[in-house]
Length: 180
Image (tube, rainbow, N blue to C red; front, side, top):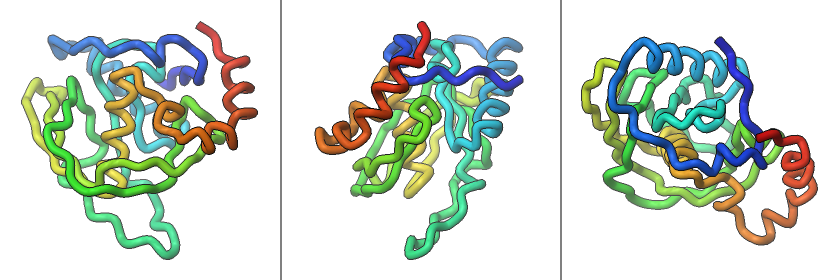
């Protein structure tokens, strides 16, 4: 079931997520709700904090992204999409990429953000199996973005002073609409 996405200014977005210790029907339902919410909002990733939950989990599906003109073809993800990651941790990072990034909790805000080009992530799946995935390009960017959410780090924290000034009006409007 689609949930309401929490907007910038709500304190839950700053909460550090709590590890998932057991996969039960509540966690499976949360994963389904998060996927429904992400797809309904046309996102490629969603962290539990974005629907006012504090479980350390996120969902990602980069398969719906269309290639942009002048941009290299993205490598296919190394795991089937969508992926549900419980207790994810980045175990290795390599290279650098800078590109446009948005966030469902920051509607209409898009800025260029620097991220690692490649990451390796360890996580538990819904079968309680420990998994490892290698990611590059957009998939790596999405993983880093969602793990930031799980640590209470937001898009605005990754912006330069100039970027913050350029979107200051939008940020102020979002904060005024946020509810705790």
